[in-house]
Length: 382
Image (cartoon, rainbow, N blue to C red; front, side, top):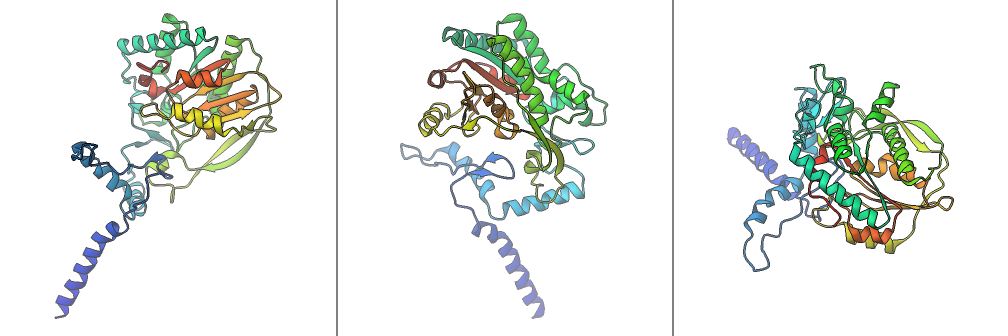
């Protein structure tokens, strides 16, 4: 009798363990995962406009279910603790554990870069060159200067921490594309890699150990090299400004991808901010809305809210397009806002002609990170 009771209890607990995550299913509209720095899957529209079942959408239900099942974060964190602390391996296929506390993103062939294996062939280079030259000439006809900025992969700047094979800094896709565009186009291209390597040689840590991106020391070094190009292209002398340096703690996006922010020690980093900024965020809802309607389109590479800053002490307008390396944590638009009367940052890797005409800038900068270079294929003004 006692054995039957115990079996009943265990069976009930087992069923409870199976049903509890279903009962706690998150039915709220999909948003962004704060820990993983990505958008959660939307609930699929399984019935199409003709009233028929969409097979593709039915199969995408699994993605929504996996992203919204109950206790997902707690279970993922528990698995991450075991994987990291017991087996000393990454709980995410998107993250590679390097040496000395350095972590690296694995997708988009990112880890092929320091080994010289990143796929960047002649046909891709030709396509990018043709598209970039098209953008340059289109903007030139509009009386606008154009600059392409490439930011290097962390593995290009810190290959020595990827593994124990003794990797060193080498020529990588960012260098190959720079040389090709300079030889075959009239595009003004800024390769920020040399500036970052110089800062590294001077003892500065320019990338976060636990994040995909540069830190503010790195972004400022990159800004200075971009600013030099802007001055050469436009003839405009950019204003100088003072920086303040402070220590802070950061748990980067790679911790988030591993669900490890809750228990892994954050890294201590040196951050820099503008001491007495002259620019302020523009209160112009109509312009924000208009630009978002133009730019936030499927397939555009849209990455977040538009930023508009105005500075009464400066002249001119600059329009920045960029990926997450130009995001708000890295202050690139803040730096330019000290030098221009109006600075508009569109966090998107596609430039729409209508948005450019609306802003009417003196110069357009398009930034993309090294692993995203193939995205420049077939990318012209839309």
